[in-house]
Length: 199
Image 1 (cartoon, rainbow, N blue to C red):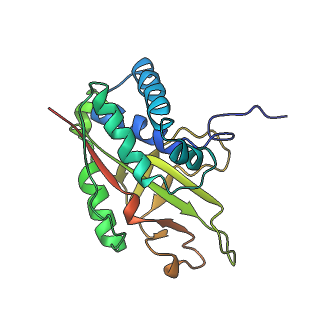
Image 2 (image 1 turned 90 degrees about the horizontal axis):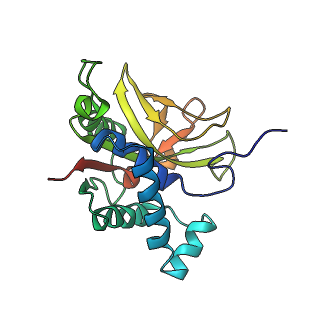
């Protein structure tokens, strides 16, 4: 029998993605992340209808990520964001350009992740499909660790054996109509948030 782990019973990966991204933007530690996570849960639960959609995974979490960022700012940590493709209309090249420009890391490995990232981070949601099936098998929010070696690498909180920690640049599409054998992952451009530490 396997133990339960984060993500197996809850639908809070969007919040975890933002907090993981804040390791790049602010260098936050475990205790700071926990404080912000709890503030986020309390803040989001104040709207009963929205909270129900979060708990029952009946939302795309795009607005909830924005709300969580607002809660983080209200808690006294300045986190700025850009939502480059709110209409979801962007091709693979545009998505890779946005992710690449905000997720590069300086080569000095003795520096902290925050220093190496220039205080910038990306969060997004990917969907994983199975061949000849309509609905996605997985809808998962994650923070980008870096775009390097022609693949997008993720900072993830999942412990699943089948968790996805990287996507090659030729291994995903940006619209469901473009799904095909060998390209069964989709990054919806509307889910991309570019984060940066505020001043």
